[in-house]
Length: 279
Length: 129
Image (cartoon, rainbow over all chains, first blue to last red; front, top):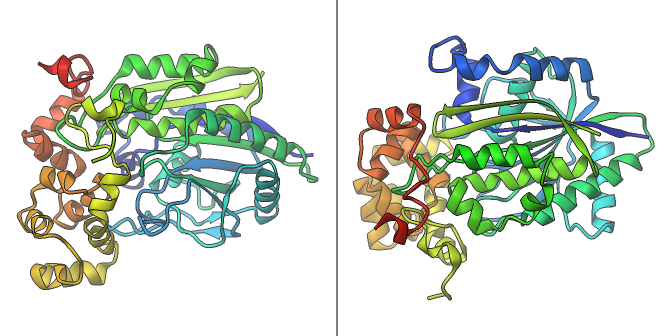
């Protein structure tokens, strides 16, 4: 039986990927952010998951406005880093887990989550940056991954409640898989940030800290947060945080916080990193 | 026009809902085409000719040619798409953020390092005035 052994919440800021790829971690601007990563990476090194299910969003890379799937599950054996209009990131290809991914797709759809199944898609910074945050710069990723791409660009994204319920269904699906695998679930994006309009640059650390607190505190408050509250209080792109609720749902009823790191700014973004374990 | 929505009074923010997306489809798909190097080259070599491939309105076409970043959003653009045009010009996200909020890229970065644009006073249009 497969089991979920942990959850990671991580922002997926492109500039963090660039700072890693181009060796800028020790520069004064970046040092305070990167100084907070070692405990999370140590946890990951100790946990050695066989598979990571990564909930992230595509940023007009694999998908455009042509087709807008709300939940798209990658079932391919391999995923390549996307060209995001300035060449793909020079990170290793990501090896998938088609058998578990197909099991998830079938289980989730029968559980009434109408997933889109994707055999071919490149993955952009939304997926690859959290991998770099947690695994550094290996020659090959030490885990397989299943990308779960969530629409958060075209309004409305799925509700926080729906994301949380999807996470719970993922837990059930993983636990009914016939192979002995350890699985870590990532929820990525956020925290507060706004890239667009006259309000670009908005940060709300109070909102972000309360969000981190309530993933192991008043979870119901987060599950019930309406879209308008994210848009208003966490910035238009802060609504990515609904994806963290997929991760939290996958951990089951109680979860304990293992580690957190919060730093402002990385580029335009309030950067959060959180490691949870099922309690 | 659609019915009023709770997010309508968030200042300086374009929520990319159905109405917005419908208005900006061709504009955003033009931006999407810039993911490919061959298209970036064709666009750079003759912007007007390249734009003829897309069904833009006159206003959208002008906003692209003028690099009027805020206007592009008003006309249905989405930031992840318009950023492709900005990146094609060599602009960074802080420079684009500055351009949309009326400050320089350096001023924008300094604002971020100082903690970002505060939420106080920026939650709603009424709070701003």
